[in-house]
Structure formats: C-alpha cells, structure tokens
Image 1 (cartoon, rainbow, N blue to C red):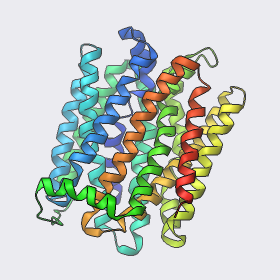
Image 2 (cartoon, one colour):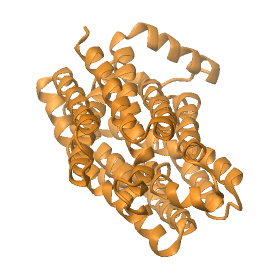
Image 3 (cartoon, rainbow, N blue to C red):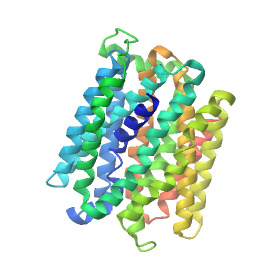
Amino acid sequence: MTLLLATATGLAVASIYYVQPLLGLLSAQFGVGSASIGLLPTLTQLGYAAAILLLSPLGDRFDRRRIILVKAAALVVALAFAAVAPGFAALALASVAIGLTGTLAQDLVPAAATLAPEAERGKRVGQVMTGLLLGILLSRVASGALAAVAGWRAVYAAAAVAVALLIPLLWHAVPRFVPATQASYGVLLASMGRLWLAHAPLRRAALAQGLLSVAFSAFWSTLALVLAGPDYGQGSAVAGAFGLAGAAGALAAPLAGGLADRRGPQAVIRVAALLVFLSFTVQALAPASLGLLVVVAVVFDLGVQAALVSHQSVVYSLDPASRSRLNAVLVSGMFVGMATGAALGSALLGAFGPRAVPALGAIAALGAVVIARAR
C-alpha cells in the first residue's frame, strides 16, 4: 500500500513540474520572453495552491478514496488537453487545470498518515513523501529527455497515460475512509482560519516552508533558461537531468521522518533551513560552474525536503480529526511560495541576470532560518 501511494503521489505531483525543462523550447516555439514563459509554472502552482486551499479540506468531510479517484480522472483530462494545446494561451489554461487536479498528491499523503500506525507515522509519511519528492525531481529528467527526442507534446501525452494506468490500481487497493466530520463545506473552510489562529506551530510551519519554497521554485523554474544562457550553453535534456541531482536530496525524506519521530522535528527543521541558506549563498558568490550547480541542487533539495517532512510531522500531530485541513494550510503556504518563487525568479533573471536567482533563494531561506529558531 505504501509503495502504491508513493507511486501515485509521485506521478500526480510530477504533472505540475514537467513544464520546467521545457521552458526554453516553449519560449522559442511561441515567441515569448523569459518573463512571459514563466507564467506557465506560475499559473500551475497558483492553481495547485488554490485547489489545496479550497478542495483538500473535503478529505475530512467525504470518503477520501472517492476524491482520489475523481481527481485522478480529471488529471488525465487536463494532461491530455495540454498535449493538444494549439497555442500559448491554451497551454496556459491547461497549466491551471493541471495545477488544480495535481492536488491529488495532497489527498494521498493524508491518506497515508491516516493508515499508518501512530508510532510509525513520520516514517510512513516520509516514505510516501519520497514518492512525491522523486516525482517532483525526476519529472524534470523524464520531461527533458523525452522532449529532446519526441517534442514537448509527447511529455504531456505520456504523463496522461501514466496516470490513467494508475486509476484501476487505486480503485482496487485503496480502502474507503470514514469521514472525520459532517460539517458543511462553508464550516470546513472557516475552520481552517480557526486552525491557523489556534496553532502557532502551524503558522510557523506554513511560513517557513513557504519561504523555502520560494527558493526552491526560483531555482527550478529558471534552471532551463539559465543553462541555455551564455554561461552554460546547455539544452532541455541537461536541464532535465538536473532532476537526478535533486533526487539525491529527496532520498533523505524517510530518514528525516524517522529522525523527527526519534529526536523531534524542530532540530531537523533548523538544520535543513540552514543548509538551504548556505547552498544558495555559495551559488550567489562563487564563479559559475556546472559542477557547483549540481552540488547546490543536491544540498538545497535535501534541506527543503527534510524540512517539509518534519513540518508535516508537526502539523499532523496537532489535531488528528483535521489532518486534511491542516495539510491544506501547510501546502497552500508552500505553493504560494512556489508560485512567488517562479514569478520572482523569472523576473529577476530577465532584469538582473542569473546571479539574482540564488540571491533571492538565500534571502528567502534566511527568513525560514529565523522562523525555525522562533518559539
């Protein structure tokens, strides 16, 4: 079950990142600049954040299995639409739809937390999060490599087929869930505001992870354009291959979850945020180097993913009956950060050049360090 949930989570969340290694190709095909082409990942992540906030709370109200199956089918449709999009505007609309339906991943993670034994919750969530994080990072490898051979439309078509193949497996394997509440939709939405006000650890987790996500997204949303520039001169396949470097960091997720179970999550969060700050500071100050870029990708991805798993361990322990809503608040903050990082990173790259992107990442990560040290 854990393997299936991890695989499904990875494929679902991968859908919102396939576009990043394609930005150079799409910019050339549609004749738009770096700031405009940056709208595609920005719109996807804003759609994801909106759906997390508005739809994920339904997991506490309805059978989560049914929600998972409906969203999986809708994601297939959104990916198929992207594959046949006739122009930039249509692809932008498809990007929003992919973001909305890609929140399937955030229904699967609370499902794993609910099914896990109390003593192993951090570890099990970490294992499913490994699937999510590998999906985020390896999606770039698959996207860049496939686009180099068959074009960008093949990327979305293959993604639609992969998710479609998962649906019958989820139908047969995922159990039904008893709703944790009978509250109306309006009451559920209002309760998220009350949860925000009632739980200081939730506020700190959402703010700190949101700032780390600004740094994360600024790097990955501009990487293809940076690599295609004069400092590196590389194409989409190399940009996608960087996902392998980031995947090494993602493998730390189960270890971070287990460490959070044993030692407490706060220590993990503080160290993780500091790693992100140091990696971007080095990138901003050191001479341009492909090898350094690989090391930075490994280290800051490790920090971001370890912090996320530890933040989830904190949040899921606050109120077991509200896990979907707590997760919605945390991940909404995370993806607002993602969208902000994509937009700011693209704008700063166009205005000031590639050094501005790690400078943004270092500043955002420093904010997360400060929050992580607060009580």
